[in-house]
Length: 66
Length: 343
Image (cartoon, rainbow over all chains, first blue to last red; front, side, top):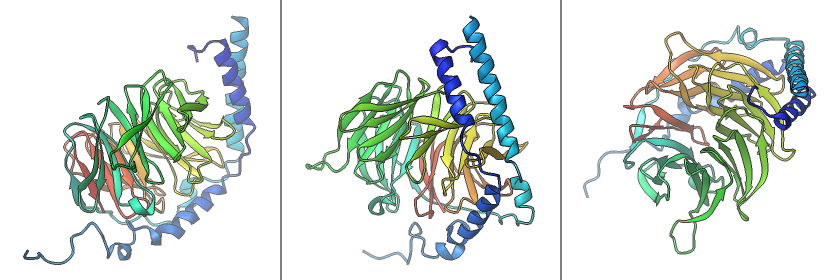
């Protein structure tokens, strides 16, 4: 903060006023976040081995004689 | 001197009020909400491909998102090249020589038509991958930053956001090559940025130890998140856009809830003492993959804040990491000059 000049300091104060005024939702949002994650886990290839059965990065099949 | 003192007092007062406002809405903590959740089982990802070709440290990588390039990624190395890789075959789709080899960041446009990069040249260079004659050429050189380019991300084929060591971020009009909006407010070098899934906001992490959420069209800083004790090197949006993940030189990662404007949890371990260089979330957001200076990637259960896996395989610092848009693979890039694909 010591390095700011006057115009920058004024902008910092304005920005803080704006940031204070934003709408804060109660952190029931935390429970929603947890529910969202738990709902998506079955679609997450890193957590659901079923989805990784068809893994395009793994060589399939045996060697082919050219 | 008097006016400066008053403004300083007002700023401190406003910061206290913001802290109070955050306390008021804190009804529950993440720890309470996941008390009954079981820890995810050990996650073991294997190296499926190693992308060889760069001749020096890799500083950045970015996956393609469009369905035509969801298995492609672009990487930037201080050997002065941008390489677009087909990660399935390990073939190089494009090897683009750069004017300046001091590159620090790269990005793939959502359309797959362009890539961008920049670094100590203070510029963001845009390359057209779909030129008529098949050659990849510089389309635009975006110059206005007075410091190094630390990160860049496309919004679409005509707009890109950059972050810089000059403490600002800029939204550019690629057509005209000019600045549309300058986002100033950070008090230290901006190290990293990420765009929200709905493309309306972006977040920046800086050497002033804070992360800021910016409204792209309103051109304002909506929220500032503190808590880190050192430079924030890496930042990302949680997959649903409602939370922000940061990684810092203080050896921790943090999760911040955007709607409640709070820090939710810190991912730390007494055994980890080196800085976080990069991070990416898995598709569901349940896993956080973070690259560290000690050459490893740690995999964290984001809800329980415990380590559930490690990706060990690089011989030098992991400088960048990304999860593909379908969540099926993770790519790591390292100072050892290799990229690895894991799943």
